Length: 157
Image 1 (cartoon, rainbow, N blue to C red):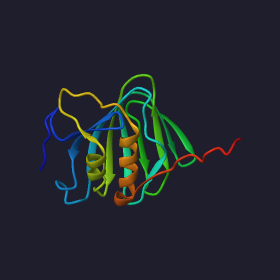
Image 2 (cartoon, helix red, strand yellow):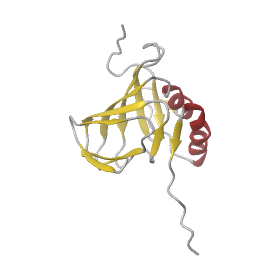
Image 3 (cartoon, rainbow, N blue to C red):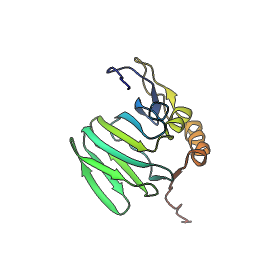
């Protein structure tokens, strides 16, 4: 059994968004990781994939544009998106803050967010994003089966 009162539990800042852990692999015998994400206006991850986990998104509030493989999905409150492992995906938040309930099966990627992120206390704000944070996350990706898909660099002269 697991119970997390509102506003409590383990939390991390990850690239400007707050991730509140609700259920970790340690609590679920490695089967499931659930977090609530508070997504800043205009924010969202670069296209990426997970080699080991399926990922789901349930939109609590906000309007987001998801890209899952070749499909674009405009998702709002009450909408649900499932992304199988090894499928490239991303999302971009609209002009207002959004909240998502995100699950990963099996668990394990929570250690990536905790290691690459910054602990988020109850009265803290997101640290400014810098090159060191990005480099640290990229250096850890392979260890946790995460792969960011960067756009090809233009070779213009």
